Structures are given as C-alpha cells and as structure tokens.
Image 1 (cartoon, rainbow, N blue to C red):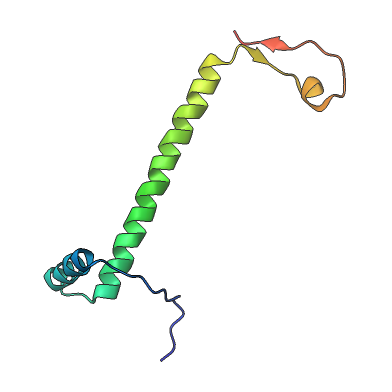
Image 2 (image 1 turned 45 degrees about the horizontal axis):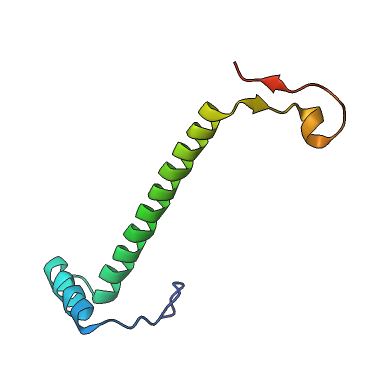
Length: 86
C-alpha cells in the first residue's frame, strides 16, 4: 500500500537511537511514529517561540515609535506633514 506521507532518512547517534527505541517501547508505538510526533512537537514549539518573539518586538516598536509617516509620505505622493504619536 502506497503512502502519501513523505519519507526521509535520518541518521541517529547511538544514544539517540536508544532513547527513541525506549520511548517507542514505552508508548507501544513504532519508532517512526514516535520520531514524527517528536519532530512535529519541536516544530510547533519553535513556531510558538517565534510568534512570542515577533509579538514582543511589534509591541516594543509600537510603544517606542516617536514619529509616524502618513500614507502620502510613505508612498511619496504628497508633501503632507508627519503625525506624531500621542
């Protein structure tokens, strides 16, 4: 039976292989399933961390910005004065 999932080859250190095997036995799941789940969780954690960082960065920029450009200034379509943040 063909699978729609992409396959990859991963080289593990002996320690990593032992840990993966032990975890798979504890969970009574195939090593590939456990490895795929661990990768998915790691990717989600990285994504969450990136979201938190970008949110903090955006909040800081909003808080610290002293001068805001008008649309005309940004696009160069007029000579309007910039608005100051209040």
